[in-house]
Amino acid sequence: MEEYKTSFVFVPPSFGKKNQLATLNNISKWWKFAQTKMKHKFKTDLSEWSIPIWNDNPFTKAEIEYTILRKDGKKIDSDNLAFPYKWLQDLLVENGYLVDDDKIKVVLNPTELYVSGSIETSVKVKITLKERYTMTIEELKTKVKLLEEDLSKVCGENHVKSSSARVRKILGEIKNATPQLRRDLVKIDKSV
Image 1 (cartoon, helix red, strand yellow):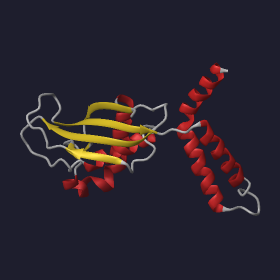
Image 2: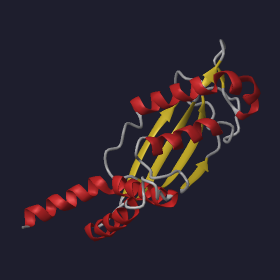
Image 3: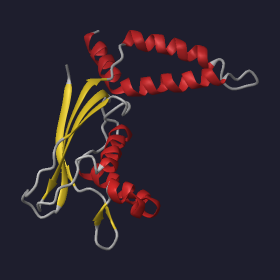
Image 4: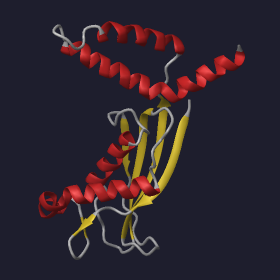
């Protein structure tokens, strides 16, 4: 089974003049005022340093392991940083690593205290992506036939919304398989 593994450390979002961690315990202080800004900055930082755009077929499943690292001895519940965990998982989909984030197994490890480093709180992440999305040339042919049928029912006075939805679904499936389908077609061309 093909897998892709990566790991990195990120600094969780914070807010206010004192750079207070944005946790579940203080959500009422930051959600309304800073959530969008923090989420955007967090995702931008991760995209630039750890999760750039993926240009190959996405995977269908993932296992993600989170461990909070604390420089001091102050405990923090491992689930208290649920928002950055969710934002990271959304980013895996947005940047093409996963088809969807509905098949992710999440492991929250106990917090590690007295970790060396210059940052008070960070999170170590281990990601294992499994089961790459694939499509054979024969499956593509079938999808194209279905696409033609449904496209004939889209637009005009006899527009069928369910056909439009199926067209969007098929296009998404073809998009997910495109890098691998290109390689398969090149391989076929070279063998002829």
